[in-house]
Image (tube, rainbow, N blue to C red):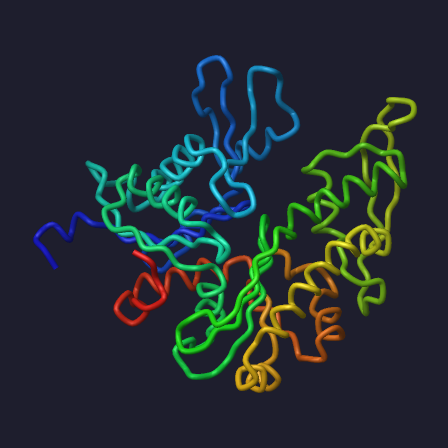
Length: 342
């Protein structure tokens, strides 16, 4: 602890493909979509987060909305850096400061990330005044956020379905024993819905509408105990070019998403087949934990449970499980030093 420690602020960031969350002083202070809007003429970023998300699909040629992260990895370096820095400036406690404090950060990264991609995340963080930057793998953070004691000699299986990737990991003794990262997650579900609406209803819908359909009536299986009501969807008719509206039910969305969910099931089965027998015995007793926004898809837990013959539990507030875990790691850096990469 040096003299300048009072100038250092600690933040935990879950830099997601769909949403970015930041924890400061044990509170989630930023929870925004990972989108930026850029002016094409000047190259300036004119909006980030919720404001930019409102513009998505509604811009003219001088404004472009970008999602700087693709498949959980930084795709547009410049835009992601500006986005992180603008989100950090939005933190209420840091707004009051006269000068920008240096930051100690813990950032989440997908488990299938390469060295180069890791360096990109690190450099982005250092450029926005990150003095000490620690990285933690998403399934690890999700496990800590769910409340699993990861240091125990006991196997736990975590499936974290985010926006860009689904991370599946078996964790024991503070390490990942076997993991699989597949690029099938929330964004793919959204594209499946767009494709289904085009092919089955001749209706062209945008990303925002498809996202809304997924949240309101999205389902992983057709036999739900409490089915959601039908939904009216507006878009452009591909035959006449006129705006039109159709009614769709959750059963249609379950059909549309079936192939992608099958691939997630296969990845879970593959990870289970690579698990050492002693840990497999633990997982038989503890079951599988689901985290991330994708795990909120109706009936997904039931479907995975039928496929694996194991109990499947959804984390409470699955959207924030990862960032909660990142926040806990930040508070106990000494305890979790084996799980973070400097």
